[in-house]
Image 1: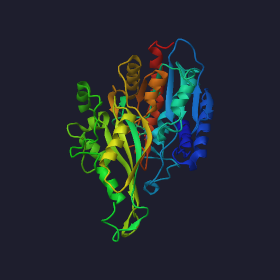
Image 2: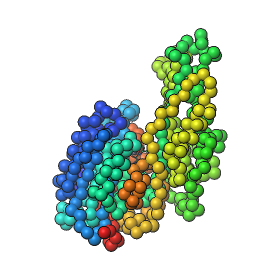
Image 3: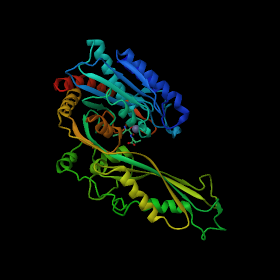
Image 4: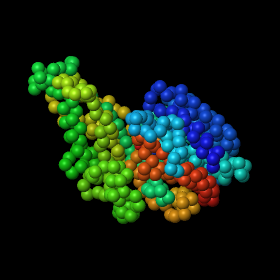
Length: 448
Ligand code: BES
Ligand code: ZN
């Protein structure tokens, strides 16, 4: 174990922040390191350049008569700001209280690297893996995977497989195995409101011209009604209804009670769309979120300025049957309808991805459930997740295969936040899970 942990710490030291071009060479160095790590494990390893960050592919020697399993992960990480809220350097991992603290520890380096360690261990012990393996690690998941679908299309035959395995989702509570069979989709945009040609004296001109900061506030406020529903016309038109069995099963999920959510989020109260439990709101209902809003004076004290422009970054989480482009058309129409006179409005569309939904009881799904049960000693909970991994639906559309979402992220792992961490226990569990999973997938007798 100490060997795997030391290698994991090495991986965490790469500041592979995909959104910030200052880290481009670190992202590339991380890809090179992973490819050589695959080669040391006894696999082929290649770094494929793309128009953005590289894709790293590893594979073993494929034999007929056994399933081909594609393990997906992402080695890019979110930015670290606000840096001052970290208790230790985000790229100098430390082990404290049974946890490894660093940016990317859970999302997603620790989760996919435990698979790679499991693979390396099996090859060391047995010389071969029980399945045909393709391991695909991308460097752009946190920026919407803009180059991965084209990569899948271009390499369709080399990437042909029977099933995809992804550990990039959550466990409902420590020690409680969880299989995810649905992910929300997403569509993002940036809204700009421009008024006067320059910042103005708010006393001399305030009252006679529109204030873009106030308009941004108005537009953002117009997104919801008083019942917490999204107030955009047609937003819910295509929403797939929740199944009764899901509603029932989700009432008992550990870690998803209101008290648990209050503790884990640190919020004073839970709020949301009326008529739904928190689990339902998070996993099966679409939302509108404001991810950033700015404009006007932000410095110390006051400044009587009427800002010439103001901005907001919005994202919408989607559920099955909602389509990102259709939803963004509706969002844009709503914003134009609600924009008062006196300003110009611009909506810049960002990345998007469709929701994903699959049958947890397929042959491979059942094998994965059995592997989780073996690894953790109890049967897994079946859930959907609120987060998005857009490429999962692309695996379905381009490669024609389902994805097993076997998450190892714990509720307090703080992904995307300061003090991200991954427990040593889950890192070890990931290694065991990989080993038993491949055995169970091979035992299905499926594959060509
Ligand atoms: N690992 C997360 C997604 C996730 C987290 C799924 C927890 C389920 C539970 C992934 O790295 C992520 O953050 N995805 C982004 C996607 C976006 C940038 C396209 C997300 O959900 O915001
Ligand atoms: Zn993430």
